[in-house]
Length: 251
View 1 (spheres, helix red, strand yellow):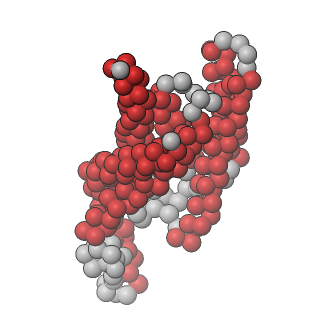
View 2 (view 1 turned 30 degrees about the vertical axis):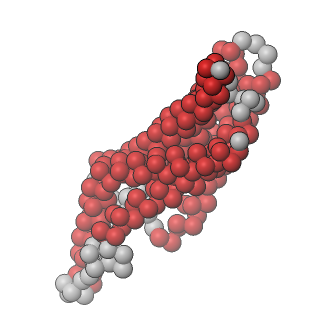
């Protein structure tokens, strides 16, 4: 059964990743192009002021080591590989959750687990450390920023585990269990939001509209992935669960 779930997760993760890649291509690439244009203009102006106008730009365009057309094609490769990896991990976690926590129906559990994963792994770190387009962020601080982001991911996962344990221990009605679970989730997350250092490396004069359009598109890409994957995975699990019952009824 685990092998079947794993294969299902890999294939549907790949499909959801490609769909999310299409969303990112349509809505995200124009923002990236605009950010790159701003970065190259600022670089040319800076280099020109230092070398009497004989400046150069960052290599984001056609003459870059990896050209923009190749980068655009690589977007689908990246989202497809992301979908494969996430789909496989999700399937293994789902196999451990079945019959233990969450909705009893296969489809309901798939959707609920995907929704929780989106909140814990994507939304929680995004609120504290949102994505930035090219030209935003100091390359020398990328290691520290990556570590902080991963810490927020771990906080989201730990808060989810605490919320699940809390909900199981509350013996009152479903509303009380939900309230206790939400509180148990929000307390460590809010503490991390307040205690972890902020990162604000947006250069002065960078268009706020472009910045937030890019960030919302980045979040939207993840939302599309998890919504599509959760719906497909839940539907496939429900369909597989109904097949034996339909065969018995036909017999």
